[in-house]
Length: 319
Image (cartoon, rainbow, N blue to C red; front, side, top):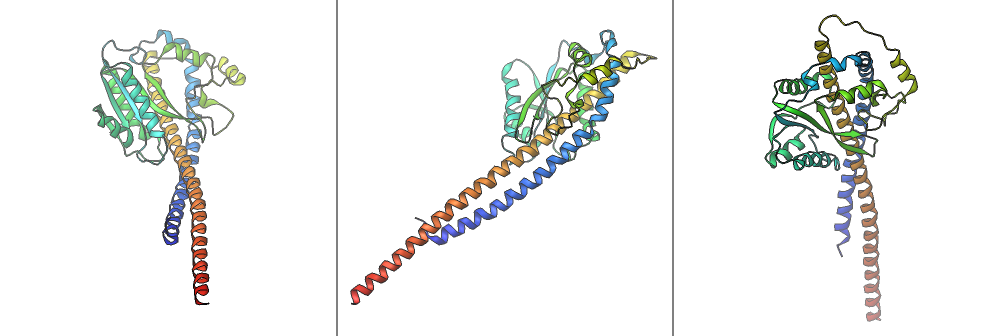
């Protein structure tokens, strides 16, 4: 058994570690709340965009645009969103696993990557994947302006026909305890999917519940009779000029907004995962301290008992 001094030093070390993990938990919780507030603030812009797209939904069948048509030839582009730092549980591992699943599904595809975050970038480089761009210096409080270089690169390469499809691997924020890795088909835009959404389903980011646990891009539709009724009486816009250019401009803005929302979700998921991981670490440290304190008390009691026995034996030998 270790000496009482060694046990005491170990207890002190674990207490210091617990202070660090507790502080990191509080910081992650603060950042998560900020990410939630930013996501909620983006709903107004997204709402107006969907209202306008609803009024123009009748013209989707007439649109001839590269965003709605997949090129016959071209490679596949995957945008992988991970974090720069660690200590966030399985957040990065789950997103990277999703990307690896795409690679395993069809080994004949030529796949390029855009990495957002150091962890995903390092993982893809280790297995020899081609990374055309890496964004590892995005701020924590990301804005729509930070998304412009990413969206511009994706849109330009898709317009040129370099890629026939674009996927985004990110993490959906479900709740503080649950984050779901997801794969989103960003391009080409599906006409039928878009029409279904604007004709009857409410996008998740227009949910009026105001619940911070409900985030964008959820797999569950949120029909709201009031909102559906409003869309049924949408303003009939009069389009002057080329409708294709207008739809293309709107599609570019919505694609940029989708990337922005996925980055927000991934950011909230990262901070939530880190908060939970640090909370679990703090609780584990507390349990270790309790166990070591019990061992320390037993060792100290054993030492006291041994000293009493030695004193008693000495007194008996003298008498």
